[in-house]
Amino acid sequence: MIPILRIVRDLLFPPCCVGCGKRLATSTGKDKTPYFCRDCALEWEKSLRSQCPDCFAAYSECDCQPHAMKRTGCVGLIKLAPYHTEGAHQTVSHAIHSMKRTPRSRVFLCCAEELSDRLLKSVGASQEKTPISRTVIVHLPRSLQNAKRYGFDQACELARALSRVSAYPHLHALKRVRKDLEQKKLTVKERQANLKGAFALTGDVRGCRVILVDDVVTTGVGMAEAIKVLKKGGAAEVVPVCVAVTVKKHQGAAFPKFS
Ligand SMILES: [Zn+2]
Ligand SMILES: [Zn+2]
Image (tube, rainbow, N blue to C red; front, side):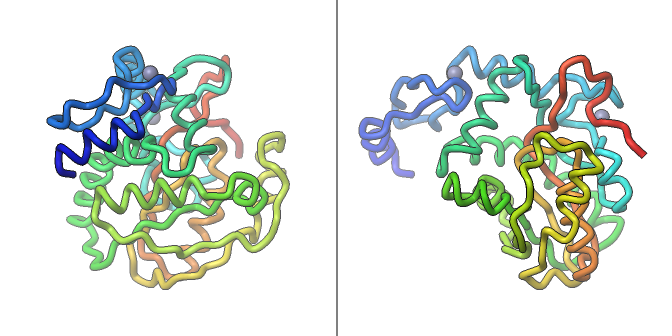
């Protein structure tokens, strides 16, 4: 964007910190407008470096994935940070919160930019092993009731932002075919039953490498169900990507262990 236009835009719509919502000082027009205030920038960096309790690497570098996803044979889960439902890592919680509630939030581009390096590296490495001519980004569609309630789909916005920074096309290849129960209060087994047959294929993914995008992964049941549909539809490889993985208080591992 031309610097003068950025100054005008920032005066009309002052940018806010995507970590705490505080107004940021308006930009000088020379640099890119920052996503975070100083405090949140520090905490965000700390979250990205925090250690996965399963493999001890930083979340932003580890490939760990929930058991439900392992069974689908997909490439390990790419993620940025832990999402603590009870307090810790407030910057990540706020970012996730605004993703779910604010369409067009700058948080989508911020997370897409953070994810893109790791994603391009992973796709590059996989491409060397198994050359695939077409790579597409597909989002895991939000539940019908939440899409109606908030008026947008946060995974779709994240996929759009990721497409912008990575240049892979965003393909609307999945849709929800029915209403399901709210996942939050369900056990893993109940979630599996709840999401069985919840997605249908609406795009051609035959022979493609599919980058499957969601904002938060908790049990991975939704991702696993979508991966099955994509593979059944002919996807050659699925690379799952999310911003954060849910970590519950006193939980010894990032993902619930279940057989
Ligand atoms: Zn802030
Ligand atoms: Zn790990």
